[in-house]
Image 1 (cartoon, rainbow over the protein chains, first blue to last red):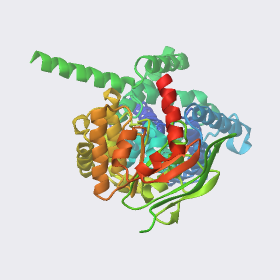
Image 2: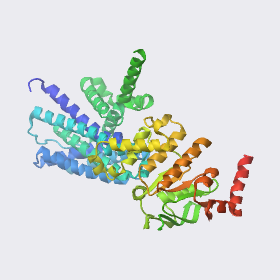
Image 3: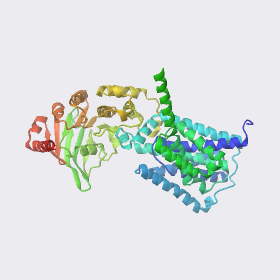
Image 4: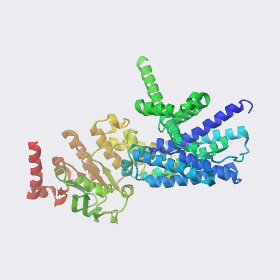
Length: 290
Length: 254
C-alpha cells in the first residue's frame, strides 16, 4: 500500500463513508420516495453504539453489526410512527426526530453530553486495512442497491414512490415495503456512522445534527433521487470539495443550500437526469446526422 | 350458485353528509352487473367501500363468503378484487407495459423479503403485453403515461386490473372520455372478458352501452338503492325514469 500516502487513504476513507451514508438515505428517499430530513440521527445512533461497544472492548465487526441491527429497530419504530404521515409532513416529522436525537444526546452524561465520546479503542486494522473495509462496504452497498433496483422489491418501491394509494390497489402492502426501506436505510446509516466513529476517533452531537442531514440529502438530490451512480458521484464530489478547498468547508451550508435549490428548480432528477438527457440528445443528434 | 360478492347494507358518511345509505346488492359468479345512477348518486363511494379505500360506518362486504370488511385494500385485492378507477392513475415513472407487469407480478410482491428475492421480469412483461393487446392499448405499451391520450390510459388501467387475475373486476366508468366508436369497441372487450368467465361490476354513464351489455342493473340515487333487476324492466320503472330524466333534463338545460 505504498502506492498512496496517508492523506489519500484518509480521503478515500472519508469518501467511502460518505457514499455509504448517501446510499443508505437513497434507499429510503430515492427508492421508496420517503423524504427524510433527519437521517443524520440514525448515522449518530450507529456512531454512538459503535463507540460505546468499542469502549466496552468489542471488536469492530460485531460492534458494527449490533449497531446496524439496533439502529434498524429504531428506524423501524420511527417508520411505524411515520406510516400515516406523507410528503411534507413526513419531512417535518423526520426533522423532529433529528433534533430529538441531538437534544437527548446532549443531555446524557453517559454519552458524554456536549463533549461526546473520545479515546475510542483502535480497530486494529491499520490505516490501509480500515480504508479497504470502508471501500468494501461502500462497494457492497452499491451492488446491493443496484440489485434492489432490479428486484421486485425495487419495482414495488417505484410504485410506492409514484403513488402509494394506487400501489395498494394492485395488492402491494405499501406500509410493509416502506418499513423495509426504513429498516434497511437506517441500518446502513448506522454502519456509516460506526465507520465514521473509528475514522475520526472522537464523536460529539454536533457531527450528527441538522447540517449533516441536509448534507446527505444534498448528495442524494444533487446526484439524482434514486440513481445509484448519480448518488455515488455526488457523494464523492460533495465530500471531497470541503477537504480540498477550505472556503467550501467554511461555506458548506451555503453551497449545499444553493445546490439543493438549483437542482430542485432546474433539474429535479439531479445530475443523473441531466446526463441521461444529454446522452439521449447526443444519440438523437447522431441518428439525425447519420 | 353461491354469491361471489355480497354488499350488505353499506352506509358511508363523510362528516354530516350521507353518501351511501343502506345499499346492498349481490353479484353472482359470471355476472356482468351494471351499477348506475345519476352524478353524485354514490356509485364511486360504494365502489371505494368495496375495495376498502373508504371505511363504511355500517354494513359488510363479503367476497366468496368471507367477510372482508375489516381488511386493508391490498389484502382485498389479493383475495380477488380488481379495480379500474374512474380517474386514471398510472405509475408515472413506468411505461404502460411496466405498469401492467408490476400488477401481473402480484405473486412476487406479496411481501418485501420475497420481493427482494425475486429478480427477472420477462414473464410478467410478456403477460402485460398480452393484456394491453387484449384491451386495445398494445400500441402504447412502451410509452410513458404522461404523453398518452386518455383512451390508452383507461385501457391500460383496465389491463392493470386484469393482470391481478381478479375474481370480480370493478370498472368505474371505463368508457368515459372515449368516443362512441371506441366506447362500443371497448364495451365489446368487456363482454368478451365476461364471456370468458370474468365477473364484472360496471359503473357507467353511457346508458346505451350499459343497456346493451349488462345482464342486470342496480340503480342508486341520492345514496340509496332505487331498483334492481333486468335492464329493460328497471329502466321502465317510474322512479328510475324520474331520477334519470331529471338529470338529463338538467344536462340539456346546461
